[in-house]
Length: 250
Length: 261
Image 1 (cartoon, rainbow over the protein chains, first blue to last red):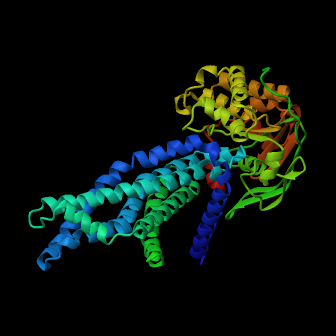
Image 2: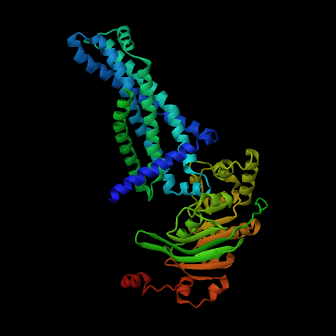
Image 3: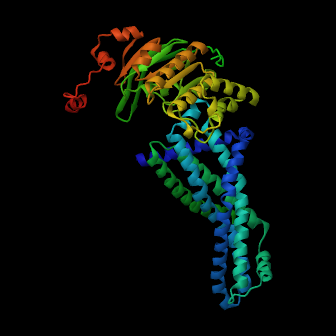
């Protein structure tokens, strides 16, 4: 019973933190410096990681699909399948997983150590709400950065698929054939669905990571525990939420 | 310290304050009154509930029962701390490690949009000069010594121009000279700003030399409140034991405590 109460308390305080954070949205211009810093940290440093990962996901996907379709003489659909899979599903999910590992864990570690070393208490005694000073710039930064990361991921994945199709001899699909096939079934809605997913994942990750960081108490050991918990909760959130949001968007 | 600003001091009233964490009762019906402008020193052994009491005053803890008033407003409400400026000097400083010392000091006026950036620079520079930390402006807290960190923490509190300033173990981990300097600093700030001060400490020298009144908290109960001289003259065995503990290696206290358990 107490475990259930704990979960409800956790959810309740998370909702409270979220509402407080968005309530402070009008004060965002005051935190432009932190916003720029966070955008650089989240975006600039994460782009290469997302690009490399997505390139190879696209490449492997093209290989697997090529392996299955070549025998049926349907290799002209490789571009369509890689293109749609990347933009609708793999890029949003894999970008979110990368953001969890690279950004979510760092945010939890930073906020948890600020909490443990009483910096968050110091903010409260100065009548500066941590939701406004710490959470708002980070959540806004991820809202700005997530579309960029998604576009990088999608393009890298497409290019990975194209290179495999072009240079693997038993597939032997020209880049023109690959991109024509990719374009033929792609509509704007596929791209916007991917963007919506990525944005929602990003906001969710940052809110979970911040909430777990700000709830940490104890010592250095608890900081490590909070980071691990944040990564696990974020990945579970991504996978479960992905099912429901895909169902809604389809 | 010409840099400090005269403020309207505020009174503090605590009535029958009770606080427990799980089965552990930390505060048991604590009542005290602190007059505006007074330096009130709260002493007591480790784990007696001093810091918990102080966290109630700054609004970081909620009481189980009883009331804590700043002026005539409840201390747990953020509105109270918006109306009466209160500052806490943390034992470990609680400085923002990702910011320079200058940015630590400028944070409060910037966030509350009290002054233009030029005025903030003037005020921060003046306070840094007053506390002899002007060379530390560009350093981050991790690069400072323990004594410097304490002074920066005090400076960060003064910049807020608080009506009530709370010090949590301000002289702990400091050598005797630095401890004396910090005590003088607290007395000077109180005198020059007029702010009400509550100092939580184990330091008898500090309590007896700068406190207007002193209280002794033991096991969550206030067992003494009075002037420093009255504390010195008190005949209560618990008070005397705390103020003048004897060291007897042949009959150590921790063995006696073990036997009592």
